[in-house]
Length: 192
Figure: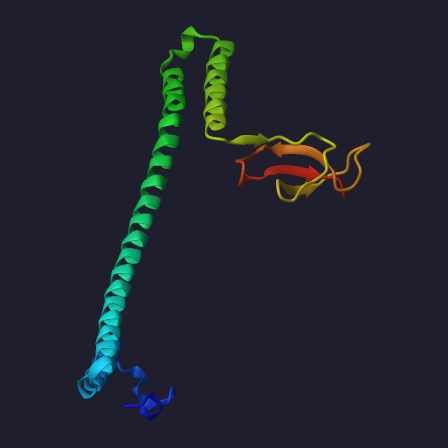
């Protein structure tokens, strides 16, 4: 049978909703019929092409299964890494919690306010160290620095002598950032 004589299906045909399996069965039946009607070298070539087609189908299914498995493993690894990162961060904060607990267990009648403040300062220093180890740095703008909306949050407008418009006049609360993300913008007052 000449390839010009093969019927070409209309792409807008109502049969588009038929599943791949049915389309493969129809195609396989047509291919089988063509091979059966063929003779000699043409039959050998068609049988070889049919085998190559079947190999390609098997390879495609295998590749799709491997892709699905890789996607599943990647998602599982992402969850595992995220959980490990959270656990590591929490583990780092436990020393700070221990220091605060130790400070709270002290008998306040036997210590001065200065001693208590030193204990709180030690816990604060440890907390700052842990944050630094986790890649967190403070956003601590100075009075007179230019307002940066990416790192600062303007809480109010407040004029100040010698500070030009759009510059910080007061730090209300420091912010924190990592290399790639602002965790909390510094809360500031800005000159109008």
